[in-house]
Length: 90
Image 1 (cartoon, rainbow, N blue to C red):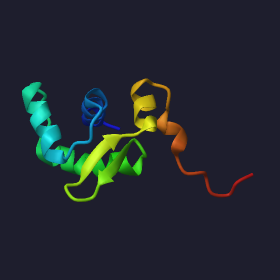
Image 2: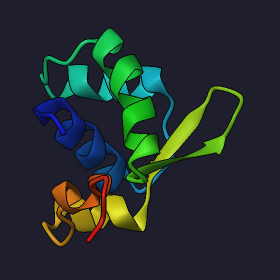
Image 3: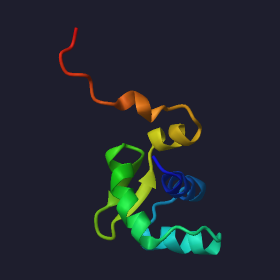
Image 4: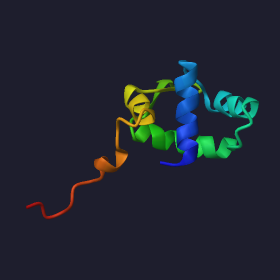
């Protein structure tokens, strides 16, 4: 996770609405947060993959924070626990 990821999650959590990439970028501009559109575009798929954000509408697409994403922001979820199991087992 990166600082940009936290900011993206915060925008989605604070608004309570679904956003497309451009509206997240515009919100950052209004709040004087310097995160580029390219960074947003690159990080959203990672947040979806981690289960912190979901796509609610494919056309756009539009994203919203998940319960897991809210728990992450509230420091109730540790993503480092979700690493792949080691080969070899016992």
